[in-house]
Image (tube, rainbow, N blue to C red):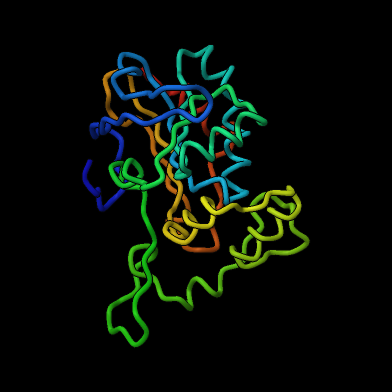
Length: 226
């Protein structure tokens, strides 16, 4: 799988994948899902409290999507052993896959933010060449759980503490290597083409961790065939 530099758009062919599952033994591939539509979300690892919340939301809409003939898949960049331990105690009905290297994120063009070096004359382009000042100025409170908007890293710390989630060695390693990975949602049609796409924070860092609502996901699935 190559590194797609821009997010895939509706009408483009969805890349194939084969990844280990977190909530049962084995692997799931693109071929296993072929012939029927599916929603797939590409997330940061378990260290991201906003991603954990979005996984819960996907689980809540899964019955509605399945009734419409649409499967629900999520990919997290957490090692499979760590993810299986976590989801053994917090089961989810969605197909949950592990990609600690973010290869599938890259194949679908989900951006990995990069910062320009200090003193660079290059024009900033969020998120592919942002300035550290842009990121440091960001303040978020996407779920309304915080007393006030906080810097994204501080927001993560506060919510992980609220959840009682302690990062282990695997989580810390993923965070160190993929802290600037963004999140993307796609609807893949039964013919293997992208039908809908939504990428986190393309308009700037103050939109970090704002993900599609349940209504938006259901509406995207309902647009099939129209």
